[in-house]
Image 1 (tube, rainbow, N blue to C red):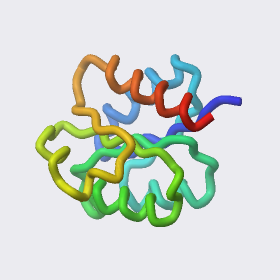
Image 2 (image 1 turned 60 degrees about the vertical axis):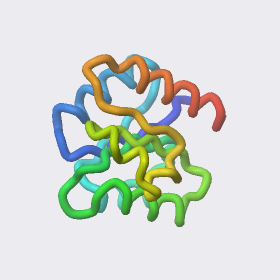
Image 3 (image 1 turned 90 degrees about the horizontal axis):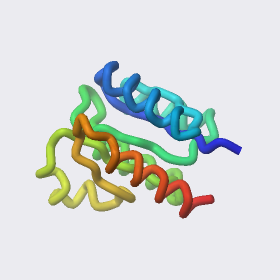
Image 4 (image 1 turned 45 degrees about the vertical axis):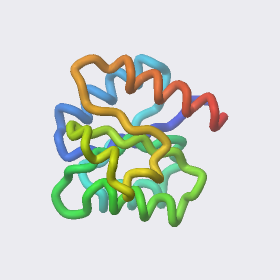
Amino acid sequence: MKKRVLIVDDEEGIRLLYKEELEEEGCDVELASSGEEALEKLESDNIDLVLLDIKMPGMDGVEVLRKVKERWKELPVILCTAYPHYKQEFGTWASDAYVVKSSDLRELKEKVKDILKMSS
């Protein structure tokens, strides 16, 4: 059975790029453009992994991460951000991985593969 990944990012281009790349890797992909939308999808869909941006309007990724880990403790979350300095912030430590956005998606795809193997 295909693993289901939820991509949460306020930038449509990023969501679509990640969706295309992860579908090529064999994943089913759901998209959310905000933290609120992501939490709604998690309530109704069976998701295996969340890719989560930090800097978003409204509810930021650190708050979404906290809510996800409170409600779905075992659900893996990869923080994916353009800002490497957030890795040092305490609120991000609950994530299962931290990837700095890049035009080279190899690191992101490797983290996704590794985490999905671990949770299968």
